[in-house]
Structures are given as structure tokens and as C-alpha cells.
Length: 96
Image (cartoon, rainbow, N blue to C red; front, side, top):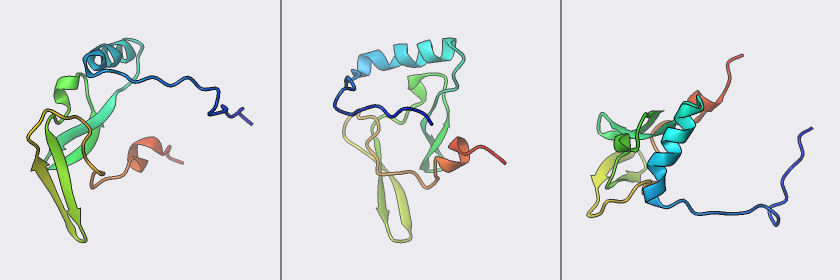
């Protein structure tokens, strides 16, 4: 069984937006496949990205029972959405 980290001893950090491109590039160079939110067919969906330029800048979502709509924001915010219409399960779950 893997040891669990004690939240009281884990260092926390905030990554500034200007450091995000470097993080994506460094992880890619190390062979990681980077996934993030992207715009597709009027929705935010998770997909592989190669650059932060593929992230939906200035978008959010509006949701209600039986309703999902992509909405334009008046800023350059990243990651300002509640959830996407899809689940991470399709990418995180291993077959089998």
C-alpha cells in the first residue's frame, strides 16, 4: 500500500500564469501527454494539448438541468468553468 502524504506537511505553491507555458513545455519534453480544456463544437472538452495557446481563454460555461452552453467572458481568465459535458473517466480509467 502506498504511503499517504500528510496534508499538514505538503508544501503548497501557486503557479503564475506566465509560468504555465514553461510547465507544459517541460512536461512534454519529459514525455508526458498534457491534457486540458479545449473548445470543441460549442463546448469545453478535455483533449491533449501541445501548448497553452490551445486553452480556452476568456470562456466559461452556463449550466442548468438539461442545458449546457459555452459563454464568453469579459476577461482573459483560464479555467473559469464548472465542469465539461464529459468526464475525466474516459482518459483516466485504464481498460480492463
